Image 1: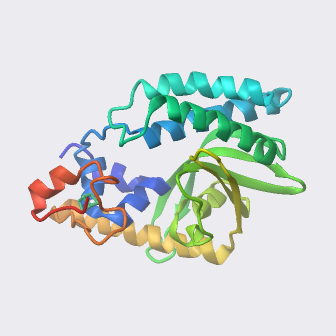
Image 2: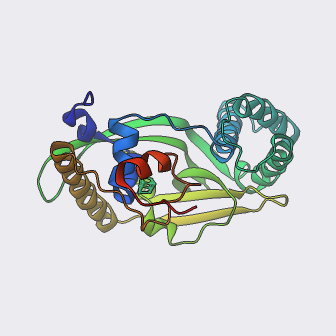
Length: 267
Ligand code: SF4
């Protein structure tokens, strides 16, 4: 085993913690064994869109927001690059996703781009935090899309592209909102969800994160770190076939999982 335990749990990100929470076997494949994960169309579309949003906010911070036409050209260029790396298309088409992407940009610009004054774009932040139960300190890391001001409220936000709209319960399920407020010292988190459909819609989901939410997150993160340490020492990386995210579509490791743990992963 090449990954050292102190590196594995000494520096954590929301995505690393969420992977451990969803499935410890997946955590092992991804972070211990570092099995390659084929790049799929949805992931690469999201990357191209994130980059476009980043360019738009960077330009706005420096001078002004690009026009919709210019932003669409930026997306086309990002998509051209991102699509070239796709290994798994899952029924999606390159040209159709380009059309959808330029419509997504046209929907995002008036709803989000015009209303947020960017303070920082695509920031890498790391903070030392403390597990309230064990007293252990560890580093929390995040890559933030945008920190800015909407009207008079300072917010930290993350952009998502998705086939479906999100529900407000995302704030109970995901670790990103609370951890980003820990990293920035802000209390307001927004998800900007752009639906990847022929008629894209833009959702703004906002939550005010409290000290109690942050304490709960740190307790859960501490438990997950101890679970990872235990599995690391024993080799007991338990697969979780009950998870909604356990399927051949959503888990790139399904064939390795079947070979190692037996049974069959849902389609
Ligand atoms: S296929 Fe399911 S159980 Fe196996 S690693 Fe992936 S998420 Fe976990």
